[in-house]
Length: 523
Image (tube, rainbow, N blue to C red; front, side, top):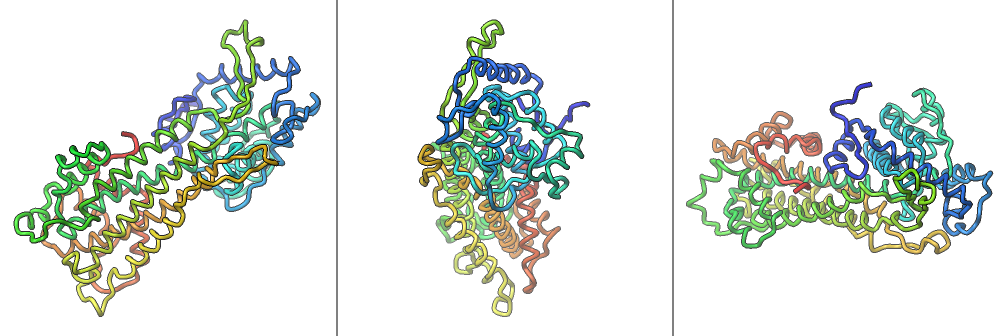
């Protein structure tokens, strides 16, 4: 079978953020054939270690507080199966399929580095599940982010051994039936393999990456709607002058200001008030966009660097090492116990993304509030031609305020919490799973806020006719007007808000403004 030209080829340890983004967006995932030798070497190393009769945590011992209990050779396969079944103790809603598939891709790339000691058969089955779009049904709740994301990864592993359920074309199917229908057999776990599948931060990292990618999209969309709101309020582009931002020195602030200035370049609306505007300075929600959104961009980029490292790392325990020299392989095989499973880096990154997402929505809501206030905007009250008889955008602004407040409550740092587990053997945990899992919903809230701003800003610009904005912003207005008509008299606004939000979530607003280079998480 030929390789799909649009597929993401996983080069273990070297996958770009763009590759992970594509996998999250649904691109097929394939493992580089070059990973074969290192996978085989790791599996042989486990056999060498067992042959020496040494106690190795989780291979021939119990787990957690039971790590000192030695397991007989005849029970090693059962030990791994018992581990998977006992740890598949998650609760809550099923993981969204795109995030679950990203988690599987992350685990595949990690195992393929050979340091987990799994067999080629285990790696091949995981790759086959991705290729056939069989997604284990994985409850979202139950991980504290150390010792890895045990419960959710156990549900993934359980499906691989034929226990639990898989999603096939959106329907839940018993795992054994799903595997059989795809021509696959349930996996028989070898020593170390159950632990290798369970131990790691892939659940937390997948959720954090998904949150990062959604945050990037709402960030870029908010630059567009922020520029459009500035036009609606007849705000100035002087605060976006490059010389101002060079003096402060933050590269992300400079890039943000440049993008905002480019979005407004050539606007007849801006030219109309360039000389005779009595206002000396605009409100902060307009004037300080480069400073706030530039800081947001800087934080997102820092989180991106952390998550890129994590996604390309190996977070199993114990880790298997052996020399690449075949002659020395048996003598050099080692199992080293450490703590790479601890999700602290992911927890910190998730907390940073949560704060950034909060600020994107908070600033956008202030622009909406400014636009509906005739004293601040100079536009008709609540952006309706006949205020009083009509309420116009009065309540959409309230909705935006509600969403922003909800995000503020969700943004409390997860990384500052820790609850000891496993009879105090695992006495400090990261809470990275919860910290990362909340991000997708928070980004969805902001997408709705930005959608409302898009509606309000376009409505505000309508009052300036026949003056038009810049080419990129007029392309965005045209995109919206194909979906949502100008608001003359009050109507049922929910469909309008949903349509505008969909344009944000699908990336259509960013695409419409494609003539302007909008900064993203990859500097």
